[in-house]
Image 1: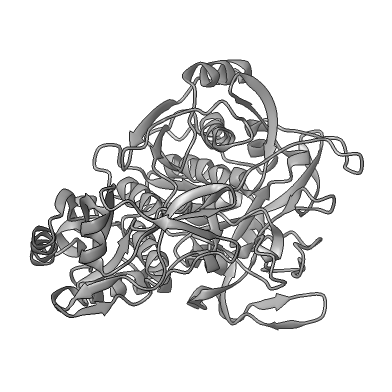
Image 2: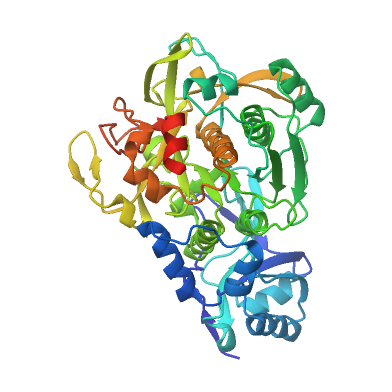
Length: 517
């Protein structure tokens, strides 16, 4: 049977990676197969209307979206037949998510998808890797848009930074999350009736830590629930510097500011399949029904396959149609995004045009007012806000006419610019949190995504409707944000208006609430 390469599925190995041996032919694995939308033209038209500002006032329900734009049953049946022909079993089928999870051996998966799988070691980790494209039979070409999970290398990293005093750094001036909300003028509310989804790719939370943290703040603890995706669970590691720090930061920032909301934490493996499956599970969850999604994990665009980026972007498009606001941290390694090749890079999934990309500032207060706010860039080596220009996504309509500034040039922005908005992220002016039984201070753009998610939860409660896809309205009314005009993230400079360090700026809570009414 002739096989055809799946566009955008090509994988390469990192330069320093080493192939150890072929993968064990009997090893069992699961693969997520993503099929096309039904009626994609209607969905594109709806999104275009939202961007133009004349969309229908009510978002689609999850049930209506599944009926109109979920997978066609005939496409799902094609994947089922393909699986049976290759000795693979169907572990899960979800029409709204357009996902079929197949289970089988390395031997059968390799034959089915025309790939060679190896054990690979890189950066102290061993994983199952591949090179080249995934292959499909003719009947699945155009039907299947992504095949994820054959390669299970770590796909993303958490974007948080634990504060560590350094001789050259200023003393920490940490804030509680409610203090940050007060400084930014968040409207008074608790997020009642809201569910904020949080995606986590490792680590976990301890209920006793949450209880102690919220009690110390004098805040009634929010309802926190965990959701298992692809067999991952709430599993605290005991390492505050690892993913536990990310999980607790996300939950505590959201819960301290929007304590009347439910915080649903979706735990998934740190792979391209796990990441996408967590996102689509949250978006299409008919049990908890999140109105807001907070993501503080990501990686340079150059480390993703195009099929995975397109599948994630399509998931965020579905979120927009459902009225879900998606807040994503844009990274903590400045304009290089930590790639180390001397070029500029941006982080994904923040670079998706349907993600509200969240950059970072250094926030200094005098009493109950903001004294100064600049770009977060720790020259002592502690990190800097991500930001720059996407190589994967074109210029959105709502960013047309913007200027990209470096120390040497000022030129029209030519592709998707990151970030959109910002907030306090410098670990030296970070957030007091409790992780694994100890109080600490954490910053990073990881804190900004849940900060904005909590703000949207408050606004949703007050307005009685979901804010949904924010960017078209924000770029049309930049006065609803606090412009940050000082600092840089490496190659890019802050300046009046949008910039590739802090986007349109940090939140002006009351003005944002009015805009989103």
